[in-house]
Amino acid sequence: MLLRAARDWLAEVAPHAQVDFARFDSTIGAPEVLSALAFQLNRRYPVYEALDFPRLLVGIEVLRQNVDTTNRDRARTTVLAMLQQARDLETLQTAFKDLAAVVLQTLQSTTGTPVADATGWLPNWLPRTVVSQLIKGRRGRRMLLGDHQDWYGHQGRGLRHDSIDVLIDLNQWHANPDLEDNRAKVSRLLTEAFVADVLQGFHDAHRVSELSLNLLVTLENADTALGTRFAGDLAETLRSLNERLQSDPAPLTVIATSHGTLLSTADEVIEADPHGNWSPPATGLIAPWLRLRLTDFSAQEVDSALRARIQRQGNDAQLRMMLMQLTGGHPASVQLLIRALARSPAQWREPARLLDQPSPELMGAALGSSSLAQAMIRVLLGKAPEPGEHLIDLMICAAATRRQHARKFATDDEPLMVGGLARFNTDIGPVLWPAVPGTSSDLLRRLLLRDLALSENGLLPVVSGLPDASPTSTKWSVAFGRLQQGDEADKLYYTLALGDLATVAQQLDMQVGSGPSAPWLDLLAQVTAAPRRPSRPTITPSTPLEEMRALTENATVPGQTPNPLAELVAACWIAADPFVGNRRNSLHAHIAQQLESLVRRWPQDSEPLIEAAQSHRSQAGLWD
Image (cartoon, rainbow, N blue to C red; front, side):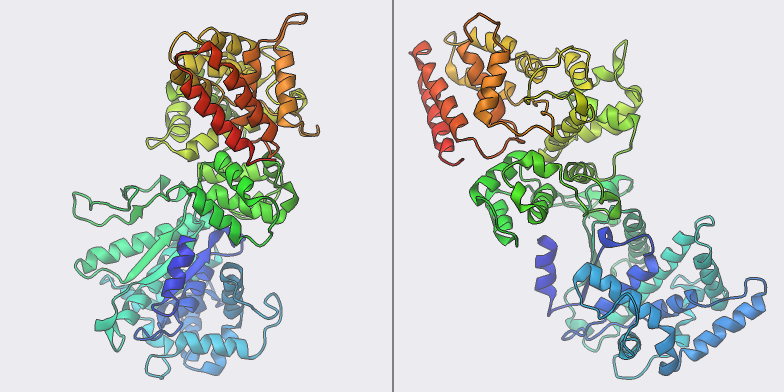
């Protein structure tokens, strides 16, 4: 939404271009991405007019030539002939026909630009239109592409290479992309040509003194392999150019959207605070990236996103509450869920069922067979999780509420973590408990735990939260069984995650009436935030109230009277579960009733209990 707003604002003001790397397949590389950006930046704007890209076109056309690799002289003849032919527009119509198709297909997938029969035959006028736009000069004259070949010799850095030899090398790098770092060499050189064209075009404008806005390039979902390479090359080119220009930086602003991978290996990143404020580095040099973390959506922003969706089904107020409870307002996760609702609108009542739906979007076609929950994990991690032992270590550590508790999995005499302390310190601890905590890490741990349980599908209970038959029968039980540490809230949290409702209810019951009621209510909320092991996906979901009764019955010794507090703990545990559906009316009403029954045990401090009961009665009216 932010990028759309920026592009809408610039629509009639200044040149801007966009690509979405999530929509590219393996056939797309840097030449196609640069071509798509150049085509979009070539639009005409007041004052800015239109940008030309002669250097880029020289390089792109050289890539297409069939150059004799065994004879340098014949290779030079081929390249020189191409440059001579480039003077003729009619010749270029044929030469750039394939380029036009690639460019416009790329634009169609990223910006929605319609293309007639983009996958096959193109109308005769299409190459002429594209080439006419890309090689037309500002003053109506035609540029001779051969005039810009010299740049490949000096590359704006005072180099003294022979430009034809460089273009021959470019052709060979492109023809052999898997040798050494040839693909990277092509990307870097064409990116430098693209930036040089932008710089010259900007400064050659008739009314350059009136150009107050930079050109804008947005790179969406730049965490793909191509996206990280391309963004890195563009950032490095701009940094190198800015160091040479010093007081006159390149008039190009790049905005890249990432879930973390893009800048995970960057050496120089400036962190902006939540308000967008930042300070330049002490060195005085401009870092290539400024990281601005998106703030979580408010309930009102989630409401707006829901209203904007095409498929309108379900109760928007209930959807908003479920989305906020599940995601905490994490922007990317909210958008993924809303897109999934558009694909499967009938699943809106059950978040767990929605999370199990296939998710074909984000990060390319590799996610086509993945569930929405796995796509969200990938988003939250900023990359695809490493399969095998590393992923299992990550899921097991997610059971802990605190980093120091999870460390135990690596340091025990019989460690649960295969990767040991080294992996925990470098790959797991910083991910699950980042320096700046937030909703993303909480959501990630919750989704990883759900996947941990589902990885042993045959051992899942018939009702969410029921304990295992044996304390060592599942990874879930083994992990939480090791976590009997921390303060009282932590210990009871881990105990409840194991499904031991009876012990938790007994411990909490012992404290009723013995101190202030407000801290006791806080303890109840902390403990019942524990995750519930999900039930088998093949079982028809019970209502939350039916689940509460099943959990309470399991916690009661046959022949004995149920502990009344067990119902309250079980009900609060279910209400705190973000994977529960919308049939919560009777559950919240029951919680209110149970809290009111505790008033007589806290006669001198009943006000917090009454307020909590009223809150649940109000919530009951919001649900089915």
